[in-house]
Image (cartoon, rainbow, N blue to C red; front, side):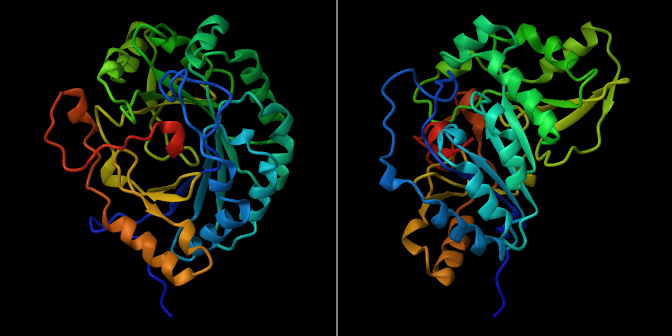
Length: 336
């Protein structure tokens, strides 16, 4: 039997699946979750490790090669290294990465690497302890710095730092983050604030287009050149300062969307396929676990609803002429 590939109607081949293992998090970052009032799924609604592995086995046969484990905060899920080891055994899977806030990473880094984790992305939106605590509503930046050191020691490279730029909050730290790349093999990725799950226009007060990063480089009189793709780089537009060990990148889904090269699908912690981060369409995969043919068809059906682009720029311009209904889920409920 010929197994279909995950190619949508726009010719985009999908080989990347982002899997949320929990909707819970130990922090409440201002762009991801409200401070209060979040309703979390009961444990029996969350996919088990065995169910996740069953999904990955099927989609690996359809061309999925890269897996990213996300949340919420994935390391609040107990024994995550066991899931990593289970996925690492699946034929066709070549890369397993993790997006984390770094609070629990340092003591887990070695075990995750030994289980088969390839690399990590660490969210770190400020280098200043007080400001970091404000943005994350309680986080300790020292734990993140310790996690970076633990990942270097464990060989979890490349290490990427995800920085959501926000007007008036951390936009004065652009040069400080870029300086981190000078003498360490660290890849800083500046990310635009996205209107995912926001029911009002308040996000626009914090939104900053990433053209500002290049302006800062000019102000600092830094020479930089386009950088060849870093492993697992995805949509980042990358640069390296002259003589730097690391690099910095720009991920600008709002001001300059990269939907034409999108190669990813998402699986939420409660078992839904989301073909596009921004829109409401989702397909419940848990009900077909154990029926490989039905699961393949469900992924194809989901891919058939994927739009040509997410139209996030329309929200920025107050343009209501959008083609799909925006998702009501917050980022933590989808998976970063």
